[in-house]
Amino acid sequence: MSSRAEILAAVRTALKDAPAVPDIPRHYRLDGEADAQQRIEVLVDRLEDYKAGVTVVAEADVPPTIEGLLAGAASYVVPAGIDPAWLAWEADTTRIRYDGGTHGVRSVTELDATDAVVTGSAVTVAESGTIILDGSPDQGRRAISLVPDHHICVVHSRDITAILPEAFRRLDGTRPLTMISGPSATSDIELERVEGVHGPRRLDVIIVR
Image: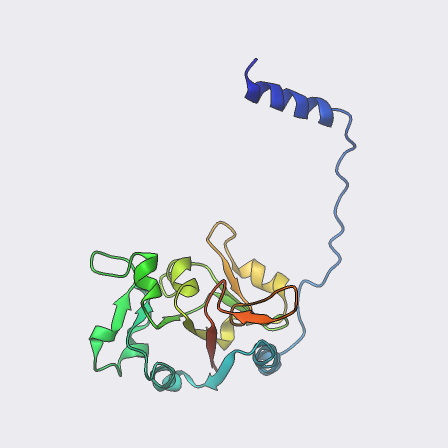
């Protein structure tokens, strides 16, 4: 008998007399009651509490808002499927680094050398202030939202849910989900807050009415 077969046999023996798994009660809330405006207000409150920058704008104001947030950035990366209208203002196209492709940003080293990243988002949970990316074309692969020090994320109000169960119903669980609740921050044993350890040090969220 191989080691693998021996281990699996031991597991089967241990589980032979195990009790049946009981039904799991699912009496938690499945839907929130907040309307669209209330969801935006709650989300803004949570994000600001997490020390994220938040701007609520009309669709037409997304490009100039991104332009202002990128002032001073020598370069920034964007996913291949980003809305081109968001960057129509950019006169110096050498600042733009597209993710992937033959001539795009591919390595972590290249990403680390860029100042910022601009992405869309899949769905956002107001109650917890959590933005979820799923790797869609306007969001790109997970690395581009984690390595650059500044993440600018566009959230459409239609994609804001009140609570998490609502958000999960909109998502495909087989996709690479990244959940973002404010800028990256952690604390050591002395409760000293350190930012930028596991992701961007700065997060700016543009909420589109």
